[in-house]
Structure formats: C-alpha cells, structure tokens
Length: 115
Length: 113
Image (cartoon, rainbow over all chains, first blue to last red; front, side, top):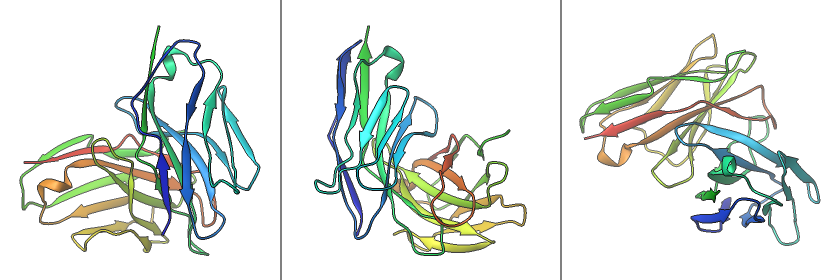
C-alpha cells in the first residue's frame, strides 16, 4: 500500500534560518504529492503541491520538488519566520479511477521558529 | 464564500456511547471525505462520500459509518465508542472525481472517557 515517511521532529530554528523537512513516499503508481500545514487549533491548509515527476510546487517562500528517482518531496524554505511555526504534513494522493483521490499522510513535523 | 464547516467543535462522550459528527462542504463541492487524526499523528482516511454513496473506505471497523445528504453535507457516526476513538476528526471536501484540491474543516475534537 501507499505510505509517507517524514523526518521526525520537533524542529526548532532561529528566525531567518534555512529549513528542510524530508519526505519520502511509497506508492504503486504515479501519485500527486502535497505539503499541508496545520496551525494550532486549526484544520489543514494546502501549502503546495506537485502532480508529476520533476514538478516544483511553491508557495509563501516554501518549495518542494517531486523526485521520482528518489521517491522524495522534501520541503525547503530559505528564511523562516516566527509565523511559520506549525505542524507540516507531507501527503500523497492516488485514488481509484472514477473516485476522488484519498490522501495518505505522514506523521507530521512540528516546526518552532524562535525570534 | 464559506469553507468547510464542522460541528460540534468539541465533544466528550462515555465509552460505549454513540456519536454523530457533521460536515458541510465548501460551496460548489460535492465530495466529502472523513479523516481521523490521533494526537501527534497524521490524519488517516476513514471514508469518502460522493453522490450519497460511500465510494472508498480506509481501514476502519464497521462501527464507523456515514451518510451524505442531497445538499452534499455529511455525517460521521461512530458506535460503541472506545477510548482509542479519541481524536480530531477532520472533514475534507473536493469537487467531483479525479484529482482536485481538498479543503479541510477545523475538525471536531472527540474525547471518549
């Protein structure tokens, strides 16, 4: 079956530091890949996505590239801010034809950015 | 434009009881999926409803059941509650079949005592 493995947290960084959160996946076909973010007390928000190999998703300074050869989708940001403190989830979708795709999530990485 | 709304936001139930959680999808969306997020874990897919039918199901027992109404809103029912059912239950909506972006509600925090 499908699975997503994320680097374990928590991750604590100083403001303006470089961020990398590793994500690797296992899938039987050609999944779409996502990063979701969850702020305290809130639901999940889509941060970025990539639907095919070598695609780069980007949003709010965050980037991730779909690497089929290494089955990876690592999240990066060049300079984090205190407001980036949240839990980040890597996810993939690969559904049955004719049905909306279900999401398979990693276990999440808690990021804390200190001023 | 209202996003995905869930009710209630918090709920405390006793072991063995039954619970119903509700979800209204984002305007224009017709597919609803439910996820269970245990503390410190990623969400796990429970099931998905489209055209008032269960279309996909994750690895959850029959105690978990659902329903979708003609207005696309949905309910998640859990019978014979166990302590291990304590979790954040998330509803996500999408539009149609195939790949589309999923929008999540803020969730219902269920505590079973």
